[in-house]
Length: 246
Image (tube, rainbow, N blue to C red):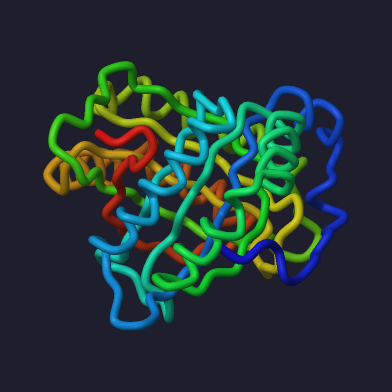
């Protein structure tokens, strides 16, 4: 898969958390991909197998990767591939291992026959953990928000709104099988300032939590607080873990 083709460092992204994020926050390597040569998921998973084989040769044992495909989303690409790393240093070690490995060219060719991709890096942190989410029959359902800040607003305005939102979910008691995350661009060619996504085990699970939230006074107030800070585009995706395979 192609490495980063464009560089975008937003001052808001650097924020006050840059040093802490580099050491402690998960780094998510994002590949935005379109199929080529008539390929599909079967061919993508075959290329995945080549990646797993190279990981084994390199002694990379803890890699975690996911694929998202559109469910209710207006996009001009076919899939998102996410590779998670414990932190920025862990990403660097894996990248250097790939760059110096004899099998990298063959791996790039295997993916290049299947998908054409652009990539970027994000910091990611978990902002809600329901405690009971279990994906027993993939794919999961991903609720995604891509947001830009209103003039004069930024990441520093989010903690209070996030705290109220989390308190609302806790009080509702309906979001046990639900996890949510926030992602901020680090090196990414994107107009988006911040993104959020929530994981559900099924469409029914998404519908139930959304109904409870949307019909609550706390949900309306939480949305009002977020709307004062940012404007968001929403979408739904199918998601599955591909490394290690479920």
